Amino acid sequence: MTVSLLITVVGMGLVFGAIILFWLVMSALVRVTGDRIQDSGEGREDPQGEAMDQELRRKAALAAVAVALTLEFQDQPKPFPLPPTALVSTWQAVMRSKLIGQRGAMR
Image (cartoon, rainbow, N blue to C red):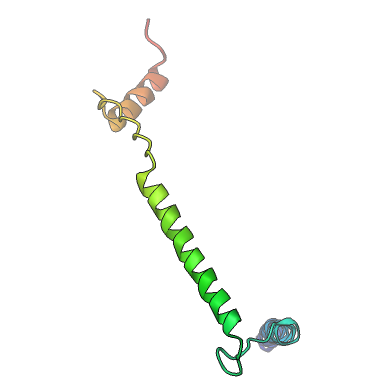
């Protein structure tokens, strides 16, 4: 019993150790390769850059409205009409086929 408990603890320790190792490696990779986010607005003295940013936002909003209007007025396909209801329910069809399978086809 002691040996099985020891094996379990060692196995769980290895699994959690590997998870923590992967987490540390991913954190290091994110810190090394991640782009640094610049402060928004501080130290920005480029009025032309702000004007271009506003122009890009205006164009993006205009494009979003155009796509939304196009999708709204686009001809939607008509849903396929459902067939008329069956005279025999699914349960009845299954039970009848089971009976025919047991007896064989009648002539």
